[in-house]
Image 1 (tube, rainbow, N blue to C red):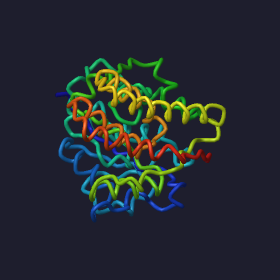
Image 2 (cartoon, one colour):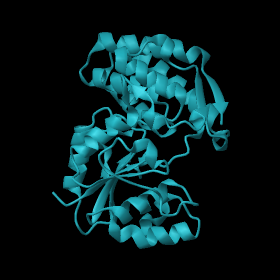
Image 3 (spheres, rainbow, N blue to C red):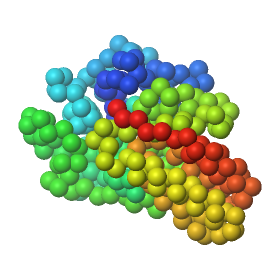
Image 4 (cartoon, helix red, strand yellow):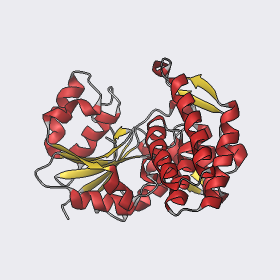
Length: 303
């Protein structure tokens, strides 16, 4: 296994949590950040947390550092700072709001990394996951150049370095429900995850609102309509006992729900995917009925 540091990115503004530090919110009496820390600490001898609130994380046994570019806060500046402080030639990055990161998947990606590569990142149907993967210190100069020019899109520098993607089929072997990529963006999502961890998903916990960025206004209505159509297709194929087509529809839905962070719906679809693979008709039917009821009153909001 290559020498690799671990980096937790915790420099966000928490705007959708009214400025409160969401990583300190507790699930089952345990802060979100500790779910992530415990996994990362068990893997990496050199562990760094990048934050602009260092006092809030003093209880963690790791290196705590702030962004080097304090006036240009972004995920890219967090990656830059993590690489700068890393003791090893490369570092594995995770965001601070993903409490379900899977140790087996992280170890698999580290084992897949080749020393001549500059970054290794998972590629899902929703796209590349730039905040969950390995970056080499060789990326520092090109990242710094982007930051100086106020270009903060992480993927913009990928063409300048040797970047390799790991495909979903390999990811699913170590994280079948893609739990590592579910993050908590809103108070509603936090409440859902809390309830789910404590005792499962109930019908009345599924939100009746799907929130999109204002930039998505042109496509959001069709997106939601396609989602409704797929739910009805699931019902039809289940009634026809067409398990193969049922599995194909569920697999496709997993991919397009993830990028918009509809974690409540994605979690149900992920559960459904497992039941479909096991050909568990009874449990599949329960979830499909729940989803059918939910889509009757789905509304769209923009932020």
